[in-house]
Image 1 (cartoon, rainbow, N blue to C red):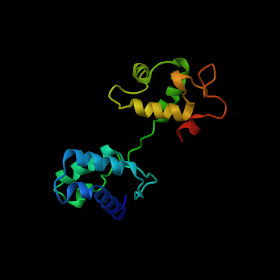
Image 2: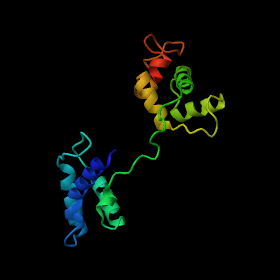
Image 3: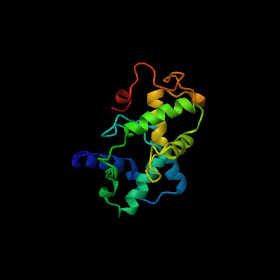
Image 4: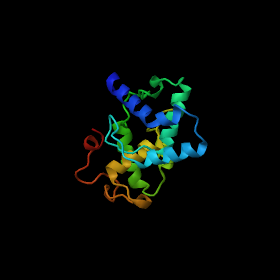
Length: 169
């Protein structure tokens, strides 16, 4: 994210919280009321298509601003710590997950990860987060409630039209 958009975002954030952090001291009730009102309105937020800001986000921005010495720079968005590091699954892991889901269609995600480690498909210390596995399986296999999968054949292999290259590429 370039410096100009970061500044636009910080200025936007300050615009949202300005009447909550400058001027007279507000009672807790006034702060809650104003935050609720702000969370209910639509905003033109720089750098995104989103139009709403939650009460908890407003509270977070207030804390950032105060902890940052009441400086605009405290409201600049932070760069991702994992920027530049691939967040996708290795193709071997992805293929194994598809196969495992076919073998264990109702197993919860932590059980699938445990099984990948047991089968030595991933190393014990290798991070594999349940949320990443869930998102992958959801996008690839069309998970529906209760673990039902429509993207696999009865043998647990990907149905026609799905391939490891397509799934992970």
